[in-house]
Length: 158
Image 1 (spheres, rainbow, N blue to C red):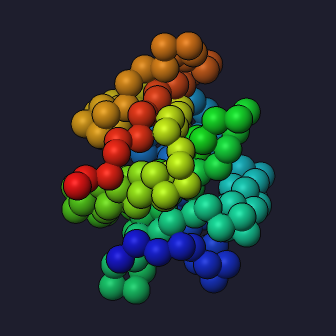
Image 2 (image 1 turned 30 degrees about the vertical axis):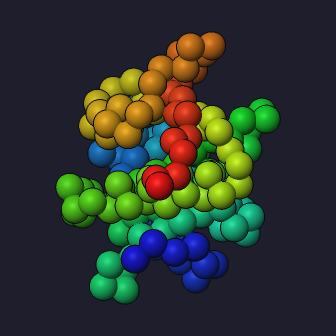
């Protein structure tokens, strides 16, 4: 089930975020950059703010949050800021369902173009986004060690 995240989901979302990020950052950047008390506190603060804005969707399975997506306007561009699925639930269609819910939300809001950044070493995520129509941003293909991707929101199916 995909639903809007609630403040009560904060701990589960922050833990899921930390677990998912460790899978693609570990071995590529120092662990302290994603797995330190300060980083976990900042992550929790950022998720609390995003939940407060109402722009966080979560996937729930058996009463447990197993996926999360967040988006907001950044520099006048709608941006998918986060999309994570608990590693124990990869390949179950949860990311696909979250992505589809985001696209529906953007479409409903009249958003035509969206961007995101993905870690350059996260081939799994890059493949996921490519299968959903994301392409390298022609104006800004890189942001540091992240690739910038863009999606033209497809029209609603008739």
